Length: 234
Length: 234
DNA sequence: TCCATTTTCTTTGTCGACAAAAAAAATACA
DNA sequence: TGTATTTTTTTTGTCGACAAAGAAAATGGA
Image (cartoon, rainbow over all chains, first blue to last red; front, side, top):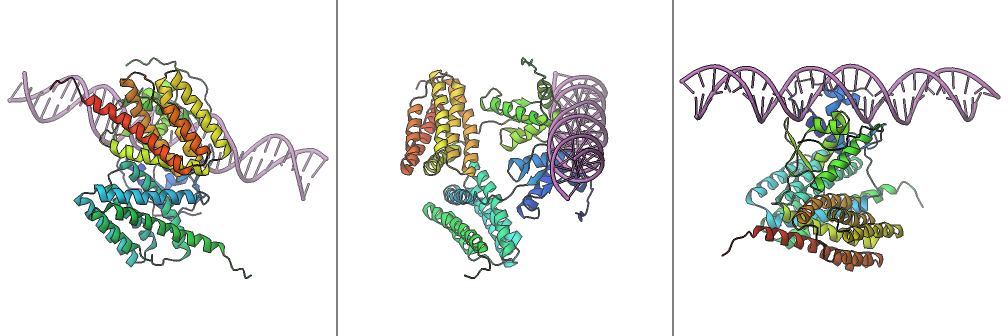
């Protein structure tokens, strides 16, 4: 239970502490560095970040608002468990949002959106080349988030971001089991999506978005069913 | 600027304060009792609720997380403005969610869901009969929220709830202008939706959900275009 | 040894106070 | 009178402390 982090007690700007804690904790949760169900201690965090409990608490309240942590009244706070029972519902929503955001991007994107999207794709491609699983997962989410932003619908975009966040945890689970393998054809599929968006081909963007989403869902599904099969000979 | 509320300084249970403040403030914002853009003073709220700033602050952080208030760093906190520019995007998302949630309710509802839905519909019907605009708006949102809950997709449900909340503000704006008129055929449309859900008629539920949503969108649209026409003779 | 009760410990929820930041008011100067 | 600078006021962000609520440990009796 020892804390092996470089306790940086640097002078911070007033108001920046909450964002610092929030961002870091969010990343640690989504990368499964903090495992689902593990306890979160305010006092310990306060010591780690060199600040009082108040800003820590605010960050935790925000994380709780996004469902990333759960708070038992008067008792412990913990990292939310991954809701396996709710996974069909999750995948349903995820695929729909893949479709909708890609479709809208084809309709509403502007020239500079494509620059940003290509930048994200480059980062994703680099992460794949480097076989960096964590980076792949994060940059993949960033790529689709950029697509969603180009769709110019803030409601879909924020909802999609939330779904993608939750997805990061599941994908991390996947790559934790099957150590850092290459994702099959995601890079190419991303290129196809970019092309359809740029061509303003709405129907094609819709189709690709749906196919891309279903592809990911299937991949996770395969993992889960495979994990169920233990070494039992019949 | 005087505060004319019955300052109830009753003993509260530990931990209940935040929810109290959050719920009340949320209702006041959505009912436009707190007008968009108006300032929110933590100290004043603390005095009003007879508690310290800490729980008030937590409630505000949660409201900010839902986008109902905006916080300028180090400076004022205020009720979020209604984003008129983003309304097409909002309506797009709203109609889609009407469709999806109604469709899923037809697929996945259980017997006791219908009881709750009928209860909400009764409350809505009563509010219409009483010509109570605020109650109509709130109970209408509750009705569709119950439909969404029956659809058994927590992701859609929470997203839809957020959209319906924002919609309460716009509808309130509507009924504020055209003082407390009867909504045309919403009660009947709700009945049709209930019937389709009960019959598990997915296609019909989808169609009705879409139509219901578009109907509301059109109605708000009519108001807005009408408001644009001032007393100018050509 | 097992169970019920009491005591201690841990962690949260709330409080009052104070310092930083920005705005508003006051002052000085032309 | 108008503008730049200083001072005051207002409001937020952070802190340390303490009390409440459970959980865990200790105690006592059979």
